[in-house]
Image (cartoon, rainbow, N blue to C red):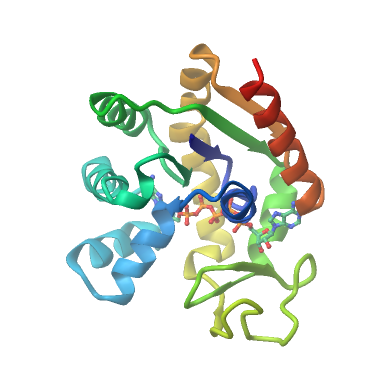
Length: 218
Ligand code: AP5
């Protein structure tokens, strides 16, 4: 299955994609993580992405689409994957559909995780991430067992520079202006599933799994 996780910054796309990727044994393809990894390696794409990410803007479509299409050409994505943070514009959504169609594949479902703005800000300001495996933690909602260390791989935890308050506001504006229109695109194709993301993490995961199970049995 090819599944897209949609939602505002901090809605829990990464958290839910992480849970589903283990449940469904599908690779988790996160555009933001790919940009941050490129930056760690100081590649041209990474440095260019950083200049946009720091301002809360989207990285240009051309660069983002190329990076994701190259990633899904890898053998681990041959029978499905979970997209997290991509697509984020109509142009990206259409480019993804076209590329999958050329190989006889298609998006199965797009899951929209809905969370009120005040909760998004709380989640982002308390978020810590593993520098090595990208597992997300939250200072109060899901703290690591040892402060500053990843439970899974022992990696160092850090806070993202774009989780500062002014940048978060800009990311929310960009989400409303550029990403919300793609909800309609998937709704018209009968692929959109809306879930209440303002519940504890496992509660959100249960909603997603039961909606996917129901849609597969139709
Ligand atoms: P990206 O890395 O994709 O960030 P984002 O979309 O802004 O989303 P986040 O990663 O901030 O949030 P999330 O929804 O994954 O939440 P999470 O699970 O971590 O993009 C960053 C930047 O890269 C963009 O601004 C752009 O510049 C660029 N970019 C990326 N993709 C692009 C694209 N396609 N096109 C162009 N540019 C692109 O959860 C957040 C926190 O809340 C965590 O601490 C978590 O523990 C906690 N939490 C999660 N769920 C719950 C819950 N149910 N209850 C309580 N706490 C919870």
